[in-house]
Amino acid sequence: MKESFNSFRKGLIVSCQAEGNSPFNNPGDMAKFAVCAQMGGASAIRAEGLQKIRAILNAVSLPLIGLIKSSFPDGSVLITGKEKDITDLVEAGCQVVALDGTFRLREHMDGPSFIRHIKSNHQVNLLADVSTLEEGLACLDAGADAVATTLSGYTPG
Image (tube, rainbow, N blue to C red; front, side, top):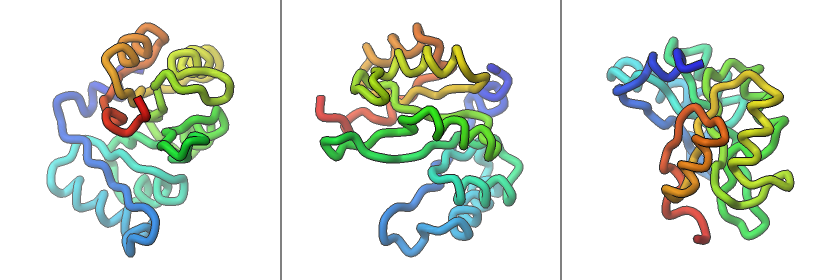
């Protein structure tokens, strides 16, 4: 599992994402951004949405960290909060799945519990997006393969 991470360790991971009414929020433009990132020396791509991920995977040879964005009931961002999303991302070809590792509840589990559940039922590389040091340590203890501070400043706490 760690081989996926070693392929882009110490390299630049480029996030190719557009949301809402952005004129770039479509699979074709996200794939073009990923091609540009690869040409510029990126070691991996981080992308959101199954259609955009599929287009990117068809356009570049870089490892892909995939995610599905949704929202918690309070409107704050939730990164890959459903087990079905993880299955869909792996089936699409993502080498790594980013998920919400915060202590907020989704599918009746906090982030570390969700990681334990996913790791016991799926063979997948997980990148836990966290907002605090405590969450990061708990996610690593739960089995996350890596941790990113991606949600720092984006959670109610």
